[in-house]
Image 1 (cartoon, rainbow, N blue to C red):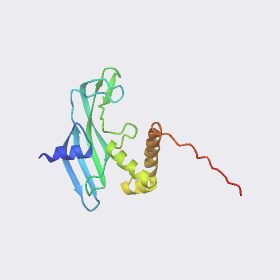
Image 2 (cartoon, rainbow, N blue to C red):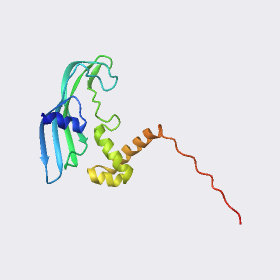
Image 3 (tube, one colour):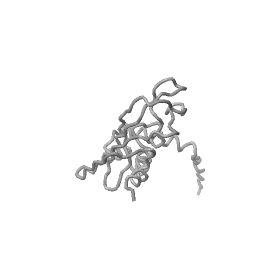
Image 4 (spheres, rainbow, N blue to C red):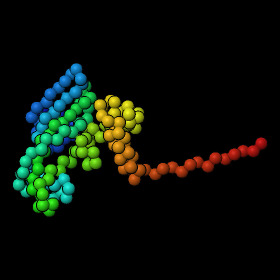
Amino acid sequence: MDFQNVIIAGMGFQDVEISDIKLFKKDLRAEIYCRQKRTANSACHRCKSPLGNLHDWYLKKISGPPFGIYQHVVLKIKCFRAKCGRCSKNVLAHCTWIHPKHRSMSCGFAEVAGRLMEETTCRATARWFSKSPMQMLRLDQSRMKYMLQFLKIPEAPVVCSFSR
């Protein structure tokens, strides 16, 4: 069994190759070093049009979801920049698993942190993941705004008063 593919699938990453993993048991922290694969479906992160020639590599630091005993997972990924014909500039390639609004988080991390914020406070979640409380508040607000589109808020019940 290829454990690299198990880690990639378990963390929710796509189109990456892991080059190194550093585990820090004392801090319950893991650092995963990987490189984005260049595929035929690689597209611009702005307009989603196909990318041209490779320009350079960009090191990006992203928070990942907890992995086993490791609460603090940081993914250090080499993303590539390439020429976009429509935007007429060198742009980063689109990653489907990086959160579209919170680019320093993976979608898996945003989901785990969001679920935890439903049960506790934003400040407690920020302490748990060693993040800024404001960053967690922004994530919570964007999740609630998205969920509000699909949920209907119930109307207040009618209170009947009985007279004696």
